[in-house]
Length: 149
Image (cartoon, rainbow, N blue to C red; front, top):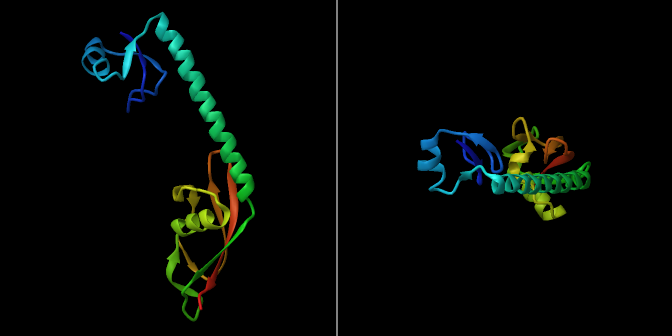
């Protein structure tokens, strides 16, 4: 049976996809939960509108992330942390700390998972960090870790 997915279904497809599924699966699982509908002429029109909406949303998010990456690229954040005599931090500077600094100082809400650190920063000094907002939008920021008084 050919169906149009109305919502994303894990391990099956995304909203707007047209699929061939078993009759029982469609009747007993997809249709009662309103995850899909039978493929007909009205559904074909709905496919086009769902795909257009998905494309518009994707384009908008891409533009926003590119603009934010341009705004953040090259900025320097200063983080104060307690350190020992050799410049080793007692704790570490993590992606959460960097995300908080970006939100406070630059009004940029960045998910901490988009900040790429191979390992937490554990030394005083200057560190370059990548913020990967989308596959096309990457900003490189400098994080300067200073010893707290």
